[in-house]
Length: 300
Picture 1: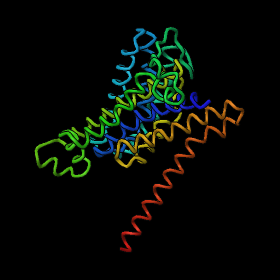
Picture 2: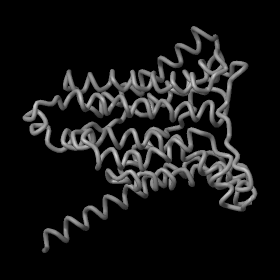
Picture 3: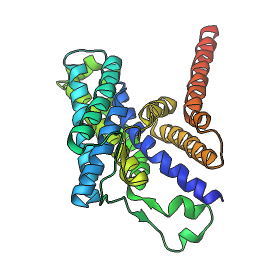
Picture 4: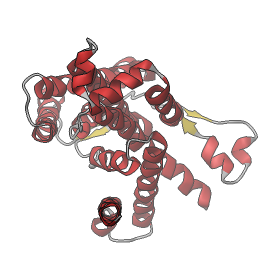
């Protein structure tokens, strides 16, 4: 009974974790990416289109990462070069991409809401012999798709990149001391742009996981606000990849729980609030903890 829930929780965690790692890197570079939702949505649609047209999962993932990266670059250029407000730009891109997706579905495919072409190649699941028969451990390690393994591999890889490489040092300096980066002859705007392209590519892959890793079709509401949940996850993580992964897993667990509760007859409208209610509670708790620490420092 517990094994299907564990697998569902890990499945729901993957898109949140992918987008959260991208958003974390972007934030450390000095840009809070509110537009992750738009990049996920575009990645989900492109992945279905390319998967159905080519029958290739690799091509679909590459296309999803590409479209996400392009949207990320466009958003970053508006913020870094035109000095627009990053919050307004991120929200604007989310609304604009949602409208563009709706237009593409109607004009190119003659459908509204759901796009379900024949021949969509799904992400294959990797079953590990012998391990799959072990309770709990088998549910965690076996039966996952390659993108889930990639998402979790990116956690230590990102930690290493940020704290053990020159590129990570430059990225952290860009977010913390832009004038210092300029003083040594580097371009903080270009570094910030690169971090946003990375965030967009990761969000594009997150969208692809939802469409060709979970359901095998595209729907206008497929992301379901998970881009904003990813935003909450990397705020929960406080610039630390492992804590960000923990936050993504927490939200993934509650996402799976709401699906399970719906299957047991709980009112869908109320149950669907669960992951977002948890987001509010977690962020409120973090805010109160920060306030308490500030008060303690002031008293000392």
